[in-house]
Image (cartoon, rainbow, N blue to C red):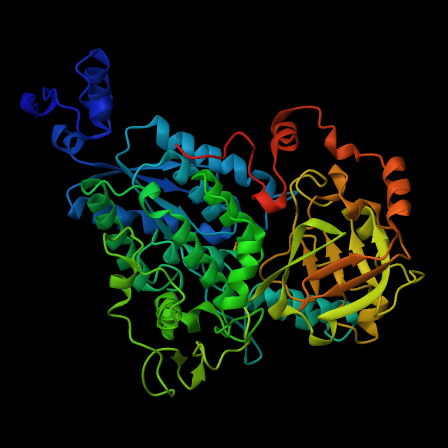
Length: 585
Ligand code: FES
């Protein structure tokens, strides 16, 4: 039925009013076209909540999103809003080539522009797989419309002959055993059948888990968003609560710019360190902060790493999975312990309208044993007290030296102890294709002490900064029992990977960084405790090599998005965002 008093209101008090209550002809036409979809004047007079839908048959991690969106809609209707679902690009880590990182900024632009261009008073962002959540964070931070993050949750732990498996840390472990000849074809097939047995993102503390945890620490997601498993009905009820909360955010005008403060980002970095989170989170968080004009220098990550013990026993640095973390109290229990140690800024705002401190008041402190309190899953301790940590420092450290003047990162909790301080001769691969062609050559001159160096795999060099940094151990060393070696590159590494891997070397080789000057046989010295990454080559010899250096062909992209990417992507220490997308409103 037509109710003239609704659309004749001249006052514009919500963003969507500029579309549906525009007194000009287009207000009339927009209402008419919305009515063709069954929405009436009452629907269009309510807060309009967009649901950014990234379900895709090409993204297994986001496969539960059609159902999740229905529950968000329920919550929006319950709270007096009108939900409108819209699609954006979806980036499925396993099915995209050459790398999803090439497209993170494209998805961020898609998300931002879809929000800006449409009659949305608020938005619920449905993301899950590695790049989808950071891309949505970046886009929503720039659009600065009330926005709430709802991730799809981790998948269930895998199963193989009585073992509980974590994808994809155990994918790598079993593949290495298969290459070494210690796992049969039949056993590998059995692992393949059981390692990922439900919807959801990788269940170890990889990039997706880390970014979901960060969303909670930033106050951008409701408590427990990160760890409730994807197939668990508690996530459906969380989705309804997220729908209701998105309407409340519109009513109280809480925008990302209100809670994305420098102190909130410090809270997020403390959480990364306590979780043993992914090195990719350093790049993503820097890019998100950059969208609000907030610099996050690498030295800030290193300072907070020195202040924050690693306390969460999750793969790949530890043993357990997100499923167990949820039973142990989830991210709120980790934040509660960090708060107990005075490591968080508790007066930061959250999407709930409460401060972070208020939202943690009802969280139980860590229990002393397996029968009481949080921190435990059955008889297994998942979250450790700050004064009995798994490691005294945080999970990630920042290295500097003549090989990385702008810094490099290492997930120190995943490094084999004897490689924390190492000096060895470089074996250089000039690209990912050179690596693939030679690494398993039986004639390769390599020993366990060799330092494997990969060049031209950074933001511009690859292009797209693929997760090529955990270079495979040469097959002949694997067969001899070697499982870790020192590896250095300007690439990234999957958050699910492990080993003595120095990443994100900046400036990258492709723009003339010193990494591009390394030659096979050079000595390299790495010391995690001293935060040192040093190439033992004299300055005059480096100057001679620099004079002869030529940029790689990857910098000359002929057309399309890849050309835009190479022309505008920033270095890893700046978040690898586009230079024209940083800055606040
Ligand atoms: Fe999507 Fe691992 S493949 S999070």
